[in-house]
Length: 335
Image 1 (cartoon, rainbow, N blue to C red):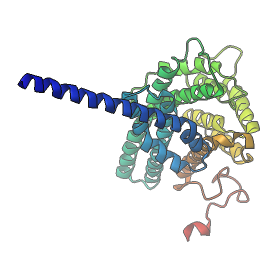
Image 2: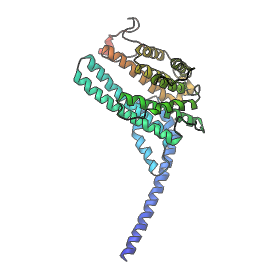
Image 3: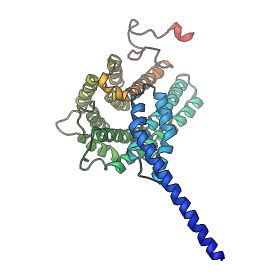
Image 4: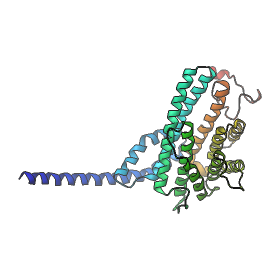
């Protein structure tokens, strides 16, 4: 009798557990379907990066937890980890400004503390973006081999985001001192994977990715290609379509090379751009992120030279411009 009771209990428990799994699976499919069809388009069209950051950081573990009961939402992971990584970069950039202000004020203890905080955050950003890159590998294929067969523009979009995950993971890992241990061979794979996309259709970003890698890792560019010219052309294509991701890649590359004058030219060029084209409003958040990244690079240059970030409304101008171009002492900033 005791054995029968135990068997009955196990059968009932199995029934309820299977029932819960079915419920969770159904719920997961509904939630992931909503995220893909409504949540992601809403976030991409938003002009509020802070809210996008909140959504990405809050919902990434929630949505991805459904991979335990249904198909892994790898495409969502590509985007969410890219955004979450970028949000961590913004926090790291604030620590970098604190470091530069401390250097300017000759406060070595504060500078050391800020640098440590910055590198920790960059390591986290790199790990997040590396996870996004691996989600691309899982969802489609490893970049660098044969190009996948894209079923739609949406697949191409996620492929591009996954490539950006890869290159940003490398950039942030290097800046963090290698704490995330991102495999460096990802750079070459990302460069080869970029040829799978139409450069004109995707705002000059694929060619900008390739050129950034050629400049960062000299010696692997094609004989017929001049990386700096490719970057210039990519920025031009982006400008014509009102999308500015290529400008960020170019500024990051030249900043890493120590070419401050070229970085200034890119920021000036960006500052003169008109508003994004109407047909790309569905990707507004990407431009907002690009704007914040350009502003952060400008802030870095300003703080290093003057001990403070870019004055309000002065992105595209610099402390060593003529007095007519920029007023470095604005009484409104002191009020």
